[in-house]
Structures are given as structure tokens and as C-alpha cells.
Length: 480
Image (cartoon, rainbow, N blue to C red; front, top):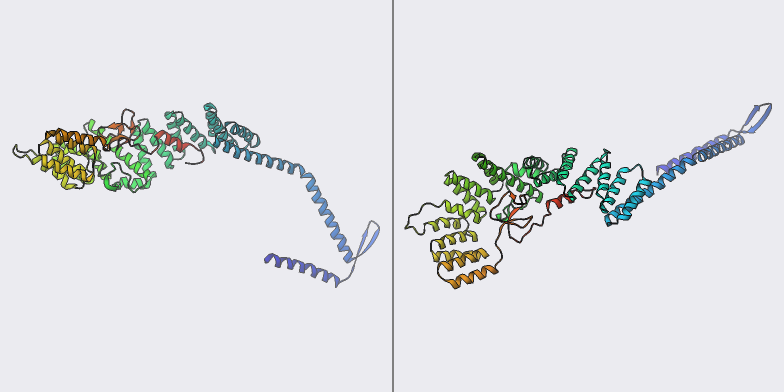
């Protein structure tokens, strides 16, 4: 609208000028080099306008003629850039498809057509070299990227990925340290450094890295520092997933395992007070973590603090009945008179009263009843346990009862049933499937950190192997 009004205004000015000149006729007289020229004012203006147009056309032609080489050069550069960009696109597509030959060819074309974009060229060359298995060329390309501050991190990340793929975790950790120094606030880099330190058994460094990592994970830091604990559905998963994010749970789980490891070291050094403090802190974070409860109760028993040990076991049993607590509970049983045949059973029935809905409670009481020849009581608890949760271990207790009662046929029957029943949960390494009698922060002999879980022996973690996980995190230089 405004443009239309402005156009009408300009046309109006021209018309007004012609009207003004037409209303004021006159002549133009020119005396130049002995010539006398007399022109009508209208004709003179036309001549002047024509002269200006001719000069303008000559000027335009001059600019076009002498600007032709620059335009030709610009067109040539644009064509080269277009070919270079197309080579980049086709090269990345070839690398993604695993076409070694085409990826190398397009990397060569990129270097030819885009000499000023060395970073992209080197990146594509590294991808092509990696596809054809030329590790030296890959390293050379990534190291060349590191020489330019704008592409240094691409080169560093590529070298980390290469070191992980070749199994050189020492070099990978060195590159990870450099990456953390360059980007100290990136959680994925901090997590990679932490995992690599754990993998190499650098426990002190890993502990510091874990503290730094929790600062980059606000939710995890809040959970740990405020002792809110882990949300454990049913309190059945020892290291729990809960409702919080899985990455946060991983940090909490590692924090717990790290603190238990420190408490074990403190006990080896005779630092009982420090060990107790660490274990108490663990149980504040996760009150249902059985390994910490067993360690703390054992420590109290050795120090003859029976009341404290009893409270620890009772608190843990209410949250997570676990048969690792049963031997400790037996050690805490009060001394019974020889005539008190029901004394030990009454002591174990306290576990039943705390968690009557748990098959573990009834199996613990039944086992004591069998040992003390209380057949009817044992059978009642076993039947109740079968109603709650049938298991191979339960049927073995039935068989044990049959043997003690002299009923060999019943014993064989229950053993056959135990053989057909699903396997019981055990402490198993999610990385190797190896079974352990007790939980430990470090799974030997392979030395994996915090990989032992209370699970079925055939169950394996769906999580990736640490090395594969780190390789995936560093693979692909365009994303985290």
C-alpha cells in the first residue's frame, strides 16, 4: 500500500513538472566556440535527458566489461563449492553405508574442491580410513584435526573412540581427561572419565570423578546429599530402579558401592568408627540395601552391640526380607534353656511377624523348626511359604523335612519337584553371569565394579558392556 502511494506521488511530481514547464515557454541560447545555438527549452531538456541516458549506458557497459573476470571467478568458486558440498554429502552417505571405495573417493574430491574446509575433509578421510581398517590413517586424520582449535575436539573425540575400539583404555582415559579439561561441564564426558577409571581400578580418581559427576546431575546430587533414598518398588530389587531416572539410579548405585568398598577398606585398617559411619550413610540412601545391612550388623555383633545389630536386621527385614540376614539373626538369638524346645522358633517367628507376607520369613522359621525337630510347625510354615511364593529352595526344605522325619519317599518327591521348579535368585554378575555367594563391590576375577545384582542366575543385564557403551557414546562425531 505504501509503495503504491509512493509511486503515485512520484508520477504526480513528474506530471506537475511538465505542466509547470508547459505553462512557462522559453528558449535556451548557447554561445560556444564561435557557434550560436538556440534551443526550445522542452527540446533542450529532452537532449539533456538523452545525453544522461547514453552516459549511464556507457558506464554500465564499462562495469560489465571489466567485471567479467571477477564474475567468472566467482562462478567458478561457487561451482567448486557446490561440487565440494555434494562430495561431502555423498561421502558421508557412503561412509554410513560402509562403501569404503566411494567414501575415499569423495574425501579426495572434497580436498580438491574445498581446500579451505580442512576439518570436514579430514573428518571424512578419517571415516573412510576407519572403514578400510587403516588405523594409522585414522590417527593421522584425527591428530590433524587437533591442530586446529576449531576442530580440536572432533579430533580428540575421534581418538578416544579409536582407542576404545582397539581396547587401549589407558590411551582412551588420557584423551578423556583432555576432553574433560576442554569441556568440564559436559556430563557425558565426566561419565566416560568415571567409567574408564573404574575399569582400570583407579578407585581414588573414580571417587573424585563420581563427586564431580553428581554435581553435573542435580537430581542425583539431591538424592545423595539429602539422604532421600532410592524409590524401590516393592523393595525387591536390591540396587533398585525406582521411579527416578535410570542414569540417576546408576549414580546412586555406584555411590553406594563406592561407600561400601571404602567401609571394607576401613575395616581392614582397623578403622571401625569410619566403617560404621559409611555403612550408616549407605542405609540412609537405601535402607533396603542388604549387603550394607549385613556388614553393619556383623560389625555390631563383633563389637558385642547386640541391640544395635538387632535393630539393623529388623529394619532391613521389614523392607526387604533376604536370606543373607538369617545367619546373623541366628547369631543374635538369646540363650535358651535346654528344656525350651520352642525358644529358637519363637525367635525366628519374630521375622514372620515383621513380614508375614514374605515366603522368606516362613522359610527361615521352617528351617529352624526342622533343625529342632518341630515337624508340625515346620510343615505349617512351609505350606504358607508355598502359598506365597513357590521356589526350588522351598521344595528342598520340604525334602529336608521328609528326610528328618524318615519319609524317604516324600524327600524324593520334593527333590524332583525342586528340580522342575524355577531357579532361585542368587548374587550374579550382570556382565559375566558368574554366581557369587556374597555381594561385593568388585566382581572378581575380572574386576568389574558394581555389577553384582540379586537376580536369577540366567538373567543378564540388558545394559551394554561398559566398553561398548563408551564406544557408542564417542562414536559419531555429530552427537553425544
